[in-house]
Length: 354
Image (cartoon, rainbow, N blue to C red; front, side, top):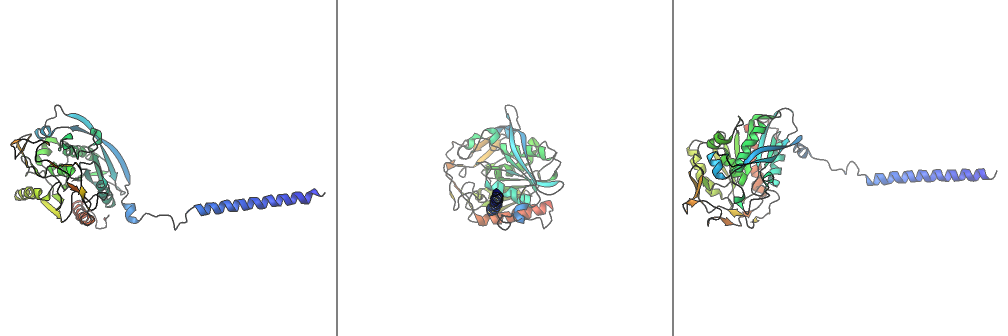
């Protein structure tokens, strides 16, 4: 008889303890889970810059010497598969695309920056990795490791993919490149090279080279395949000086080509790369041909004008340690310029802004 009140009291205590434990557990969860106000929310601009879909493609290409490329020769060339990242914008239907070609250091922060910008505009991007499939990480300190025109060939191979892709408008494809990739972009515009290597059935609608090397003059380099060329160059660039591009631009304009050189005062090489040093710093060991004048005297033969001999990266005119650096002001100006150009070229609505 006396046990019943005791057992009831025990059960009551256990129930109270269980309730307390449950409340404590709930309180702990509530304390550890961030409130709705504390959860970071992506801005509209950040959401727009995200790809709606990402595809990784292998592009069948070749590794050639510059002489082979210039002569249109494939005998002895090495087959290679280069990687390419296709970022489709989060918009329905077919969309225009900008093909991005990296510089001597491989794909860097500037390529990512531009890909996000274009995606935010409703434009797809295809970033080509011309190095990894060839067993390379960088050519900055050893430019002879890969013929410079290989990246132009990769750009033509990208058209094979884009011409048949169901989400891409094949009439609205632009080529954009940086440094070594800028040079590849600039000369991919040549009619001669298109006729030799482009088998896709389509052509680039425009070319946007950033700080390209203009120290080489190719035969027939004032005859372009069609489409405007817009060269963006920092005036403080001592890697690929803008001054070397000015005579070439003048020759192109005299030949009636739609070409412009857009200068950025005080900007160094790689000025649009957010992770590059600011202020600019020497790129230790990097090779530059800024003191060279190179001409193609006969098809496939590149001659150092100073020596009259075939050009080599062992020549005395090849120097080292040029500067590389980010310039936020020049980057903002270049972004505004490129956005406006692409928007007009692709006939995008005014609301299509990154």
